[in-house]
Image 1 (cartoon, helix red, strand yellow):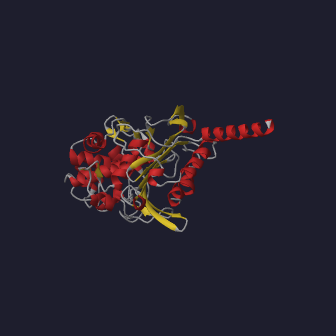
Image 2 (image 1 turned 90 degrees about the horizontal axis):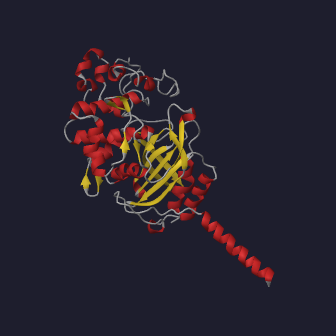
Image 3 (image 1 turned 30 degrees about the vertical axis):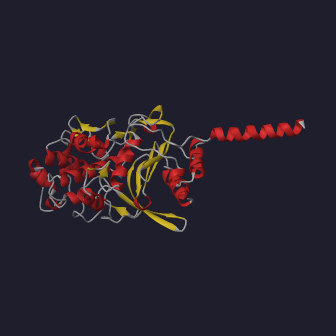
Length: 377
């Protein structure tokens, strides 16, 4: 009898211990604009997601700082992990160890570019920008002397699609190298003049090259068109209406926003941009940007060899999930920062991470655990 009792007690203890190891996944309801729900409420398989969390905790997947899922307009999954704060001057770009949580801002890296794209759309809706076919130099008359017959053909659309043709070496040198053109931008006395003075290496529209020169020009186009620096324009027309109050912009110099990178936001607020786009430009019943802009900016304008294509500062992808496929558009940033929008599944997935010098596992987590959790319903 005693042996049998001990076996029963050990089994109970073991089950209790296993249950205790599972992470509480239901997000906390706050007053930040998100309605929360359980995974069961929207038909997601919790076991798949618990497995993903376990592998992040045991370091099978390293340097993942947060994962959030919004389904059917509700925040249903939110987990945070300890990670290193972004620091350009530290080895592997790792600063202090941070206990990430719902109230902790994170560096977005190039996810910032998709915010800039939305702000361009808002300025276009307002009539401050007339058309994506406007010549870039029309917004910078003070730099007319840097134009020529070929450069005069560069339009806003070319900037939005990373096809301006301007010479730029951001992809060839690491960001730790001071000769990287994006790094140089922070030390140039005239960053806009530095970009516009670059020679053309291809005709505008002929070739895709992913570079911050294009997006930082767009940030200054917003200022030229609206009379507001991009951060002030964003506060009035995007962040304020979205209820985003805790943020920090990066600056190229004391008066120029780094429009291509390093905006800092809470992951919950990153997700608001994804949900805004999923809603066709509407947040809590208020239209912030036209549905036409969302549709145009998230369709393929450029063919890309690795992804399904590129829109207006948005990446396009099609995922295979079992026998099904699902289309997505995404804001992607160095180190594992992602806002992935899956319109057909009414779903937004957010990642933050610190994989600046190592492989980013977020794509595997998405395809192995998160998307199959939807298929399991």
